[in-house]
Length: 236
Ligand code: SF4
Image (cartoon, rainbow, N blue to C red):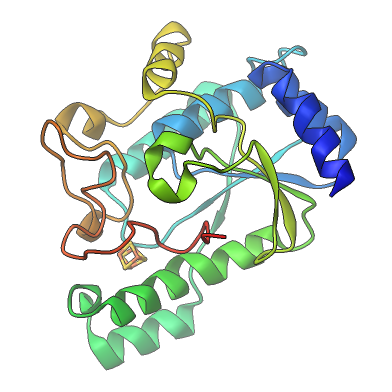
């Protein structure tokens, strides 16, 4: 943990691009998981051009295609590939598990119980994530502290015991206004859904637009009184 403390001090003193470069140069097999949200797009921009080298850093970028995403998200994936001239690794759910789930419970079982919802998230997100993280030493995320109570005291870097990996959250202290300012200043592509009241965007059947004054994650699994988390970032 002493090493993590030193790493935390180093990363907190660096800009986003510098911090990403530092991690890419000092660790083996660094991965970044993107769901193409605005925070993730900021990090993608910094990995591919907005860093001290002005070139792509040695960071593996992957996404999880749950099979239930918005068409706008797929369009944004392609726009992002084109802008940076990069391809992303895509991890899909285990085919047999999805087929079994659909056969047993149909296509919308997540609406009927928390257990069903967690089962679907496990099959479509968590198991593929574990495959994607296999062999990696550092996992970069787009988490921000103000997104939810679960994230409010997350540090910039921490040990993720569930996945046995160093987790680096470079935007953890950023405000939403800073994210928007970066996107505007650097012409970073983002989803048109953000202009229609969607702030946090996940799978289409489990995300709705929010109204003014609602919490940014109120539109995720809105029918549940849950903590608005799918389990990718397990609470400590
Ligand atoms: Fe399934 Fe909804 Fe979770 Fe997506 S967010 S994996 S559709 S329960």
